[in-house]
Image (cartoon, rainbow, N blue to C red; front, top):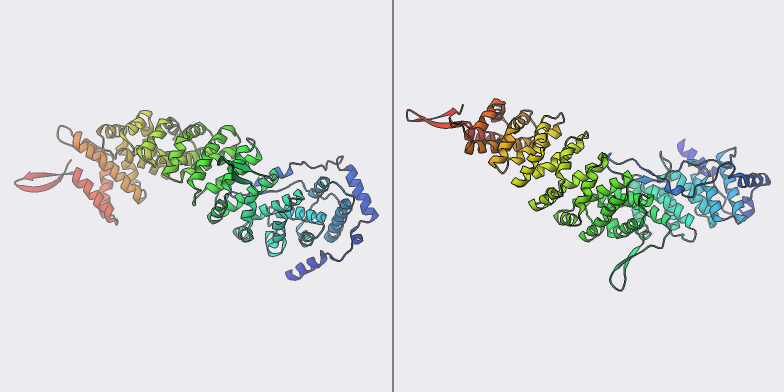
Length: 575
C-alpha cells in the first residue's frame, strides 16, 4: 500500500519535460495575485533580512560533550501565495509564478528573496528533483532553495532521498556555479545539512569527493618570492562560511574523516580565516568550532600546524567574549596539549599559562573544565614543566576550584593537584602552605566517591618522597586517618594499592624518626586507633595475591617486633 502511495505521488508531481514555455505561463488571475504580492510585500512585512543565512543553530551535542554537527534551520517560512487546493496545484502555482517573474527580468536578488519565503513540504521533493535537472537557471534556483529548506527540517529531513537519487550529485555540481552565487550558496547549504546527518549520510558525501571541494573553497596558502606564506581567498564569505560548517560536521563524525580533512590542508586556511574574522562574529564562532573538531583526538595535526595555531587561538581568547567562542578556544587549547610534551613546551614558551589563569577566574564550568584538563596534561610532564605551571601562580586558583560547586571541576582539579603532589619537596611544601593539603584531606570525606578517590591519591602521592617534614605535616592534618577511612570504604583496586602505599610511606617515616620513649612508632598507633590496622588485616583473605602480600609486608614491618624470650624467637604485636 505504501509503495503505491509513493508511486501515485510521483505521478502527481511529474513534470512533462516536453512542455513548452507557454504551458508554464500564469493565467491572468495568477498574474494579478503575483503583481499584488510584489506591490505590497513591504507593507505586509514580508521583506527578508539579507543576513538570514547567518542565523543558525547547533545540532544536539553528541555524547552530551562536544558540538559535533550544525544544521542551518529557518523559521521565517510562509506560504506567500496562500493558494488553496491540492499540493500539485500549489506547486504548479509556484512554478508559474517563478517563470513569470524571471521572464519579467526581475533582479536576481529580488527573485531570491521571494523564493526564500515560499513554504516547501516533503511531498514537493519529486518536483524539486525534476527542477534541479532543468536547463533554466530560475528553475534550478527554485529547486536548490526548496531542497535546502527540506533538508533543514529538524525531524526526518529527506537526506536519504537526496542520496538515493541524482539530487546529491547535482547539488555537488552546482557548488561550482559561481556565475550565480545564490545557486552556489544554496547548494552548499544543502550539502552542509546532509553533513549534519547520520554516519552513512556523511559517508555518502565522502564517496562523492566533497572534502577537496569544501577545502578548496576556504582559500589557499601560497609562498611569495621571499618564502613567506600568503593567504588568498577569492570566494564570497558566505560560501566560505558554509564550507567551514560542512567540514566541521564531517570532522566531528569520525576521526578517519578528520584525518582526510587535515591531509587536504584545511587547517592553515581555517586559521587565517579566523585571524581575519571580526571578534565575536558568527564567522569566528563557526571557524573556531571547526578547528576544535579538527584538533580533537588522534591523529593530531603536524607540530608545524599546531605551532602555527597556538598564538592565534591565544590571542582570540583575549579579544572574544562570547561564551561559545571562548569555550571552543579553550577546548582547542586542551586538545592541542594532548599532542605531547614537545607541543606542551611550545605552549608554555608562547605564554599560554597567562591566558589559562585569566580564564580560570570564569564562573562558567564550560570554560573551566577544558582549562583544568589542559593543566592535567601540563602536569604529567617532568618537574621542570610542573614548575613552569606553579611559577605562573596557578596554585591559588586551583585551590579555590576545590570548593567549586561543580563536582566535575573539583574532580579534575584534584587530578591536576595530584600530579603536583608527586613533584618536588618545594612544590609539595607550597601546597601545604596554601592549604591545598588540608582541603584534599577534607575531600576524602566528600559524598562523591570519585572525588574521594582523587583526593586520596593526591595525599598518597605527597608522601612518596618520605620526607619527614612533609609527612609530619600531612599526619598533623589527619592525613593518615583520611587514607584509612578511604581504605575501609573498599574503593577500586588500583586506588587501594595507592592508599596502602601512602600509609606505608607514613609508617616508614614514623619508624625512622618519630618513635616515642618506649620505642613505639607513633604513626603506627594512629593507624591502629582509627581502625586502619583491622582493614589492612582483612586483606589477608583477599583473592588478589598482590594485595595480600602488600598487606602482609606492612604488618610484618610496622606492627610486629621480634623479641627474645627464654632464648626463643617470638612474634608479638607491637602494642
